[in-house]
Image: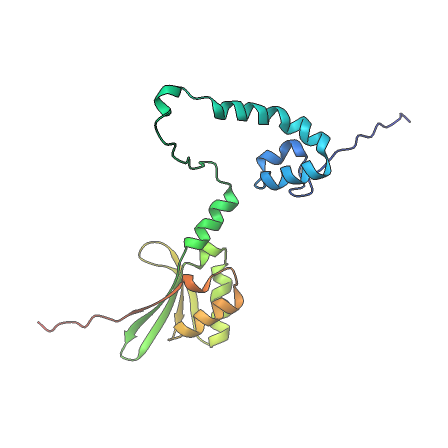
Length: 187
């Protein structure tokens, strides 16, 4: 049998990628800190030359005379990581629990916006149906978005249940809305 040559490969303790590929992950700064503290020779090999180039590029400008008197505006990063974008989207997303009157004392409750928080709507509808002993389903609304339709007036209870079972939904992102059926005017 031939002698097998084994090569030791270093993997990042943060993102579990080889250090050369950390820049393609979502946690580059943490990976750099880990590499610098644990393996400074690897850090110097990977980031010393690129840091010098970045520093020199940051000091140069196309028109030094024109920019001397002007203030520099902060540049927004176009390359936000996917995780940061998703987190920002979740923080801005709203869950609407809407109570709609059908007939005199009959109501339905609709829940819209849970899919943003990666909640399976079919499982959530089944859980609501079991919990409140009523009919519950996933349907498309007029705008073409999926929503959970629950037969009955359970808006407050659904709000509490969402907060209890799905901690990813912030309490201040849940809005209760009440819609009344418009009365037909006699001719």
